[in-house]
Image (cartoon, rainbow, N blue to C red):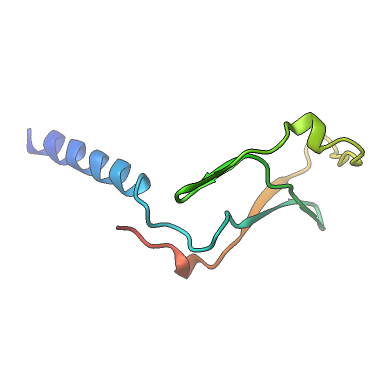
Length: 92
């Protein structure tokens, strides 16, 4: 019985920590890059809510108009890289 109670309490602690106002510092979300092979591609920040601010932008079709597509070969690994210092993460 205590095992299940502990699991439920831990679950709620994880949920509450994830929904806290702590987290990463900065006025906007960190930059995100795609890494495909030896190439690194910058992504475009669209609509987001960060801390107490929400920003609305055009949709993805409009934002990508005129951009060259990134060609990816079958089986190629794609990685997402966030530009932030892991020491800046805090939990409240």
